[in-house]
Image (spheres, one colour):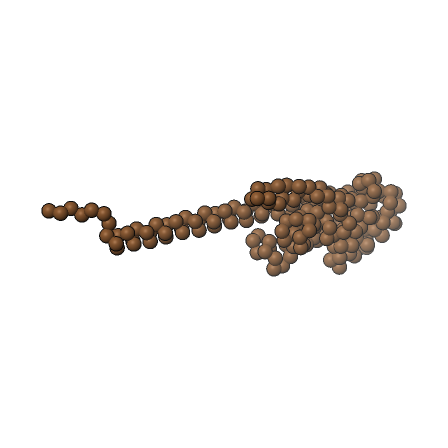
Length: 202
């Protein structure tokens, strides 16, 4: 009786096909896992940047409102509050950021040196890849308006201070008792622009 030695052509073809299919699935799964991990890291960094900006804005608005409440010349303080709330109603957030950077009253005690309630610059980490290795450098971003504020907190399409802005800021009104009806203050809101990849991911 003769024993069978080796594999038939059909068995070899089936084995090779299965091997190719399994390696393709493994490669695709690994690639998808790496992409998913990169997306999660990007979302995590975006959330950190949003939280940092929200904290800066909330503190700036609260300090400005406190200074206006303690201002000795209350008629000037009320004018500033009315100007603020008028811009908030008109959704003119650029003017509100400008007012936090350069308030109308010059002797307010809680303002940063130079009179601004917001930082005038931010040291931003920027990661680039050289030969596949991450290299982090720091860039000082000057904050002069609402756009540079968003860029300083890396709320851009590529997460760098030079990318296209993909977020919006709504600063909101301040507490005001006059003229009636009273205005309730709100916390700042930072959100993604409609239709951006960041909005879709979140």
